[in-house]
Structure formats: structure tokens, C-alpha cells
Image 1 (cartoon, rainbow, N blue to C red):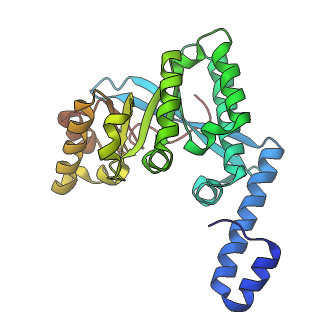
Image 2: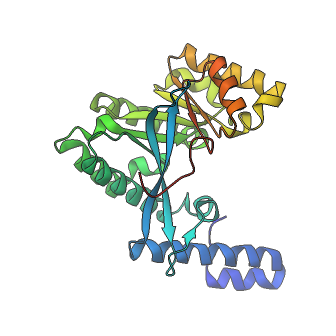
Length: 266
């Protein structure tokens, strides 16, 4: 829900107290995030993505943006990302995320890192300038950068995403389809994209060891991904039983609390 102006909130308050309460909450969150970005109170937390199998070697890390209030407490992303995704503030968050990721790739030449990207940011001038600077400097940062784009975001701007992928992949950038399976509309367009990997939506992974329906659906998603020669990451793995089953089913990599919670240190 987009934040309302003060006058609009006051008008809604007279008619719909619940709407007013929700809009006021959104406005507070937007203010907190905007102030945190201005004060540079943002950093990445890292969660490992490991290769399937007993060795569990780390393939890459996902960098998850975190913003802090004045006391240093983390503002949960779930509280602000749905609110800001369609706003200019969402573009600012993507710019900060990319800048932090490129800075870390410069410092750690053996690191491969994925970050989330909204398709709306692809056309943002500031975001593109940050990316171009990172790709043109020495060190081949593009070869170690992965953009994760959600199915929902992809389908809202699929032509823009396709052109961007065609532009970036020759420069080494890898693309991941996040939340694979959550939006069935993507299936009819999947052949038009050139995703390098997919992350199966957590809803199909949770409790999969004891859920025959999820087992069938996950196997179907893995088969589709393999047909299009895409690496498969099972997202949201929490137990050894889930990991074993997914490995047997064909998942290439695993991500989830079984392998580590997001942490600020690598």
C-alpha cells in the first residue's frame, strides 16, 4: 500500500479508522527507511547457498539489504519492502544494495554474490550508473555478480528484463529467477528468458519430506528448470531430511536455515 499524504490520511480517518491506521504505519516505515538511507545506516547480511551433497561447499552468498534505526535495531525488510517497491524509495534501496555489493566484490576477489533486483530499477539512471561503473573497472566484477529477480517483477516488465539480460550476460552477469513456481504465468514465457538459475519458491520446500504434494510439485519444477538448462536452488531448506530428498530429486544447490541464517559477517 502506497503512503498517503497528510491530507488524504486525515480524510480517510473520518471514514475508515482501519485504513487510517494502516496508512499511518506505512508512512512511519517510509520515514524510517528514508532517514536510515540518508544516514547510511544500511548494510548487507549474507546467507550461504551451498552445493547439494555431503560436502556442502558454498557456491555463493545472497546479500540481503538491512536498514537500521537510530538505535541500531534492524528494521525488518518484510515491513518496508512491500511498501516501497513501487516508489522512488525502492529505487534508492536497490541503488544502495548494488553499491554495497560491488564494494564487497572489490574487496573480496574470490566472492560470488547475489542480490535482489526489482525490474523497475533497470531503467533507473542512478542505478545504471552504479552498475556501469562496477562493470567497466578492472577485476571483472560482472563475473561474480548475480541478480535475483522475482517472478512477479519479471512478469510485470518481461520485455525490459529480456533486453537487460541480453545486454548484461555477455559481460558475465548471472540472472536468477526468484520464487520459481509462485506465479504460473511465467511458464508460458519461460522460453523467452535466459535465466541461468532458478530458486524454487519456499512454499514448495517447507515440510517437503512429509508432504507428497510438495514432492510432486518440486520435482515438476526441477524438471522444467533442467529442460531449460538452468541450475536449481532449493530455497528455504530447514532439515536434513528436506535436503536429502531435494538432492535426490535433482536440486543442484540448497539455501535455508539448515545451512545458516543471514549474518553480517562472512
